[in-house]
Amino acid sequence: MSRLDEPDLTRKQRREQARNERRALEEQQSSQGDQRKRLVQLGGAAVVVAIIIAIIVVAAGSGGSKKTAAPKSAAANAAVSEVVKLLQGIPQNASTLGNPSAPVTLQYFGDLECPICKEFTLGALPGVIEKDVKTGKLKIEYRSMQTATREQGTFRTQQIAALAAGKQSKMWDYIELFYHEQGEEGSGYVTESYLQGLAEQVPGLKLSDWSSARNEPSFNDQITSDAQAANQNGFTGTPSFMIGKTGGAMHPFKGSLTDSSPFDEEVAKLTKS
Image 1 (cartoon, helix red, strand yellow):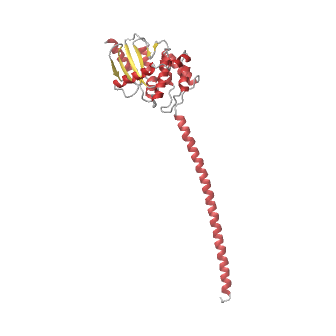
Image 2 (image 1 turned 120 degrees about the vertical axis):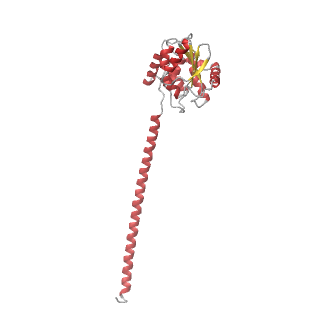
Image 3 (image 1 turned 30 degrees about the horizontal axis):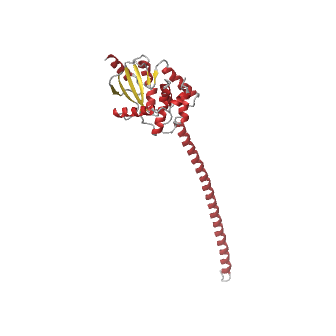
């Protein structure tokens, strides 16, 4: 190659090099554009996935929570029918269920928001009522003890709502409906609307009289007295029980949440002794 050709070759090489560099730059820019596009698409997909996960979590949380039954709904009507059937024909006096002259007394310490109390109410209690209360051998006194309810004010309000129903001999109707329609513990379901709704479901309860009775200061005194009795007996959870001959000494009793037999046997033993 002559010296005269070298500048041309150099220029050609430079042009080729420039074309190659330009092509490489265009390819790089195109690749970056595709990458940005993919990132945008992935980002959008991630957002969609996050939204779907959030919906699933919320749905799962909603499905797992216990919703209270609205008055006059099918669920509420079913609960009312069950409670009416269970308590039908049994005398009630304030917080006591059963014949006042029954030879044996069972004191039931409970918190209306306690899920274990609900287990007892739906488990062993119906058998105890059928076999021992309806036959006149046993009367049950409901006593208040705060365990599951978080706020002291809420606890007193809900327990007083039940005690106020007792002024019309309907406390056990109210208690039973509360347990049957109990909501998720700690969810804050016990509102004024909820308490009013329960009262509306109690057959024969005069709402105006019930509302007035809730202001009686004696109910606060009764709740305090129940708490002192629970403390004196060393109770730390609900439900807790005391049993004994009516008018005589009472002793702590473990019983069972799901089986009425231990209660039946203890009542039989106390009746014979």
